[in-house]
Amino acid sequence: MPYTAEISRRNPSAILFVIDQSGSMADKWDQQISKAQALSDAVNRLLQEAIIKCSKEDGIRHYFDIGVIGYSNGGVRDALSFIPGPMLKPVYELEHFPLRVENRIKSIPDGAGGIIKQTIRFPIWFEPVASGDTPMCAALQRAAETIAEWADAHPDAFPPVIIHVTDGEPTDGDPEPIASLIHQLHTNDGNVLLFNLHIAAGESQSVLFPSDIRQVPPTSEAQRLFRMSSQVPSFIVAAAREQGFEIGEGARGYGYRVDLVEAIKFLNIGTQAINLAR
Amino acid sequence: MIRVELLAKYIVPRSDRTPNQCEDAADFASRPELHVAAVADGVGDAAFSRSWAHCLVQGFLESPQLSLTEDWIGRVGQQFFSGLPLADLPWYLWERLERGVFATFLGVIIDPVDCQLSIVAVGDSCVAWYGNSGKDFYPPLEIGDFTGRTLALGYHLGRPPDLSKLTVHQQSLPLEPGVTHLFLMTDALAAWYRRTDSEGGQPWQMFLERDQQDTFLAWVELLRAQGELQDDDITLLALRVECLNDRVRA
Image (cartoon, rainbow over all chains, first blue to last red; front, side, top):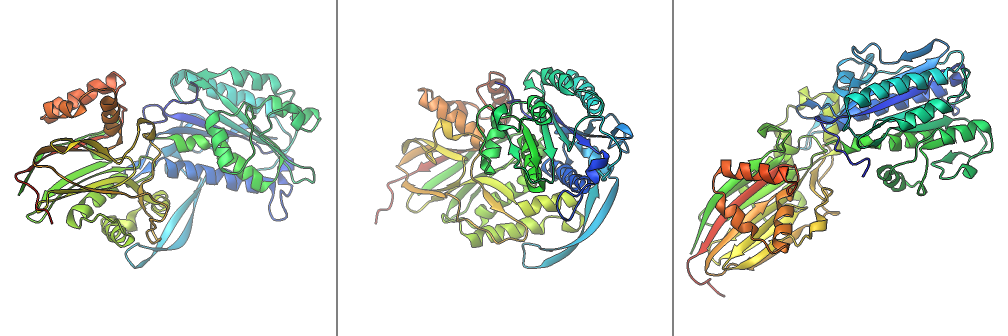
């Protein structure tokens, strides 16, 4: 049965974010905040969450390799390039090499009747960028190459997850053939998962986890992203249902014109593998 | 009159863990007024599971009680936090403590006066017994109940204990004159025991034949290799209980 491999230090998995950083990401997502800033916050929270979930009292365990690809006018870049090593970094390296750290004071009851004031470090890795055009094909090609190499080196791993977030259309061609190539990548435990999240501050109704292309607006952009999205495996279906999504069998890992709140839920569900580490 | 002897205390870590990373705990204490034993299994996807499991076991041995009250958990929790270097913890472990520490738990109390066995359990740590008091298993879990996703005793930094959503199993039964063996186990071994028993095997015999740590370890490794035993932390606490005469009956 696919997607049942244990995620452990002996058998880590991988998560790769592919983030659109084109000029339109500077637009407001809601009334307060730009898409780029909100997405940066969300990715930083997910990276923090990955570290927390992989941590034990003896340190951070290597349950995942994690990477972030950004694409914009400057081309395709490793958004975590300040961390040594390849595109996919061991999760403990993220904690060792934050881009910067914010210190926050927390007052916490100590469980023994007292209050402790503690300075807590909140690391930041991913800064907002919004510039120029949208080289989506090049970014997905880089993601495909990165994941193919990783899967070759980890044949028994829980399959890697690629989460692609965009607000627009590619300016460098048709990404669908590259997505098809990604869908064929696999480990012995199943195919690589490619989830696509299209974000928008819009009036039109969003679509989340559609099972049928007829649930998607009849535009070439919306329908192409549907076809580019992997079918959601059962462990993610269960997580999505627990969070209140009406998600049917055969649903795709796809959100179209989603708002900020929906996007955060989608990202949490898309990274459910973090909860499978043992 | 009763005689209680600890036959075995085996704790075997999962194959990718060192003994110091094993998240099971077990212990036994014998006092004139009662005999107490407990096992706990720290939940694998939380941090500090090993320390919490040890605190629960030691807390029960020091202050055994059938009704696991929030006061009792609170006292064990204070003991737990007093042993942590809170000022030196990195940000991610503070987050972990706020989200809670968790362990399944099983404790037994043997009353030497009336030869009574009392059991309290939360989650899928179990006790089996075999001998003059019959053959049984508690809590009454079926094979399908050993899913690895079970309720556990939790404690959160900055929150009072809350047992309202937990199922706490409790049972008391008389021990018959003669010898009864008790086997306290964490979930992986308990699942094996339940399945072997249901298939007509004699799992208690397997335990009694392996009276040394090395023979037990070799047996665990064999079962793991054969796929008959889940590769999880394994704990067995085996007690021989002998009621030397009829119970004092009220």
